[in-house]
Length: 175
Image (tube, rainbow, N blue to C red; front, side):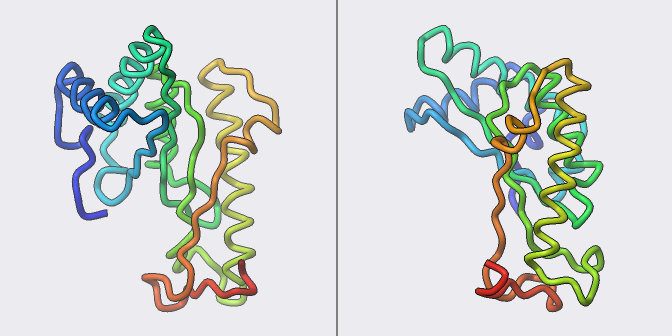
């Protein structure tokens, strides 16, 4: 959350493409997860650059018969992705990225979680809301996805135990 994601720090799409390609090639990975949070999630220009650069890396790897699966990890509230998170996903889809999925950071709900609501229920609400949002984003991008296909593109990562917000504690019962 405190570091700069490459699309935040690098404003040239060609140079950014090289940055992503260098990492992917150096470690010879077939899957990446872009953790976009903090100030990076609100940088709309970075979302556009990231989408263009990652799509170029995916295209180059596909040409070499080395596909690259791309995930993005984003914070959520109990009502789903924030407007900034929606913009991050939109930037990838509009850039031409074949998005493998969205990983939800179901933690630190704070004021978006009702005081009587369990962390498990808050996580379910956030996940269901994000599913609806993703279906809409794919539809807007002209990419047909069934309900089941969108569910397969969702992952959930809770923070076990005490979250950063003192009122949020994810228990074994929540798990």
